Each structure stands twice: as C-alpha cells, then as structure tokens.
Amino acid sequence: MKKGNLDMSDEPRPEYIRSDLGEIIRGKYANRIKEETNVVFLEPDVAEAFPNDKSVNKALRYLLEGANCLNPPDATLHRTPLSLRC
Image 1 (cartoon, rainbow, N blue to C red):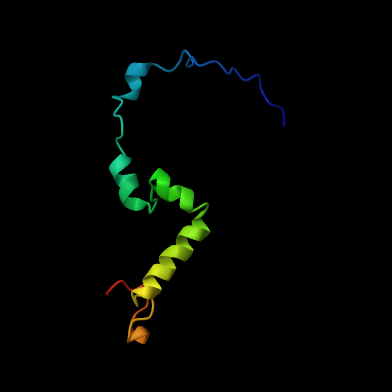
Image 2 (image 1 turned 180 degrees about the vertical axis):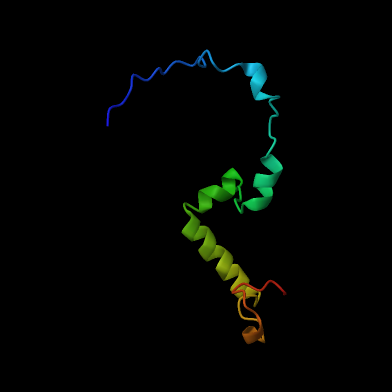
C-alpha cells in the first residue's frame, strides 16, 4: 500500500470553506462529558500523598470499611459492591 504525499501544513485544503462548517461553540459538549465520566481531580497537596490510582482506591476502601459501608447488614439484597447507605 503506497502512502501519498501528505501535506502537513496548518492551512486547510482549498476545498474547505470556513463558513460551510458552522459556528464554533467553545465547550459545547463539556457538561455532557462531565456527567458521563467519573474522573476526579485531586488538589495538589492530596495528589502528593497518592502516587497512583491504586493507592487512592485502597485509601477509599479503607475509609468505607471503617464506616461499615462495604458490608451492610443485609448484603445479599444489594447487587452493588459499594452500598453507600451509611
């Protein structure tokens, strides 16, 4: 398979006209992405204490165990492993 001569310039091709592409809206999908993801941002001082995701998960599980949230009294009725009804 031959690769063509790729033009790597920052200019769009002549057949693309900016007015045909519609209005640019900054952050158009930001709220949807925020709702659909579970990314959590740590403050810098907290991030220093946790070098990776495993250490964060371990600390949070330890905290939940201390609050008796991981093992509710009637665990057979709950399908989710982390029932936060404490």
